[in-house]
Length: 445
Image (cartoon, rainbow, N blue to C red; front, side, top):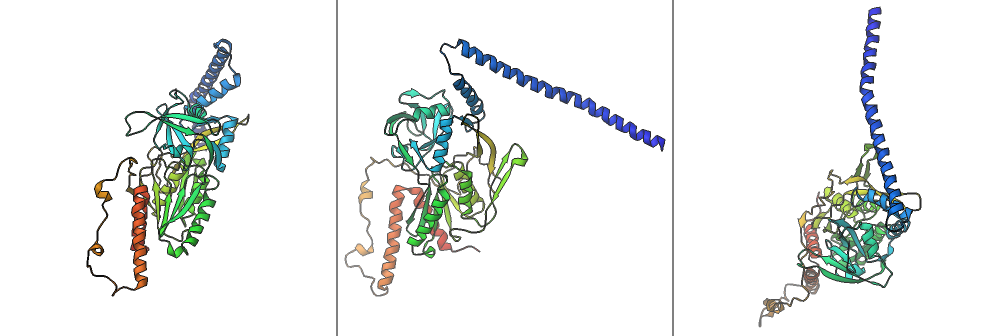
């Protein structure tokens, strides 16, 4: 028994010894890291004091510290930044749906400001700005070398004032200038309308109004159609939608899903991961859905498109989305400002990360750029001819009733309206054709 006890104690002693031998270097490494951090902070303090004392012009200490904080955050990724008190207030105003500006969502790429998307019916949209445009100068002053916040500040100004942007666009050989008059931006989160037998829900942003607008708009269009049974499906148009609130993206996805995961977010700490699931109930009653996306569809738009695509609840049509698959947390800090920090990535129900990849449409449909100055060809001007146009052709009055004739004429008119729409918005016309095809196939088991 004594031998056993001694052996046991010996084993314990060895274990303690081994633990001590490994713990020593680990503690030393941690202490060395802390020492290095303190040395770097001392270096920052030295440089800060040297700037205050010797810079060619007197500098405001508060502005210098804010710039240092912002530099630290923007070095992480394009979406992390420091929000000064006025910028923080602007952000809160934008999520409520009304603010002053140009009406473009921007990011930074290769030192220049890149347009994620122009917002519908805003000065930038009316001036012809497009998703993917690079803004290289504002009123003749180059943006190269500026942070995104500094560039955005240059674009701000009083409502009614003019700004001239120098733009580089793919497919256009030379830079060109775009003149825009600043205005108050009033965003309608969702616009709804009937196109033939289909409901089109144009979602321009994800702010606090989005889900209420979508629910009310869908209900209104069902009523205008004389009941949901007279609607063949829904086009959810997310083109040039730069995103917004995660909660609203989840609500819009949930509007058309009965069950299953909508999106998950995964951060650095596994305990901070979140999973969001759909609740029972489908606002559309299970009608076919087509989602339209393009390169200006980002963030919250990609969450919705990815969720509906993964659940095979919708056919996604258009062009690859922007690829912003990260989540930013806005944390208020002392002094009435805030820190916007990237804290996690989001994943679609199938586990896809969209970061830098985007959502790939099920059917790629590129919106053709039509030159408005281009004259119609003689062939386009020539009216079409049919059997009914031939002199002496037989009529079709014996085998068809007046009601049937009216129905056929109405169907023909709808087809012609879609054909006309194809000239104005090829992608939307394509989506409506797909909905018509899905309806013709009937419901799936």
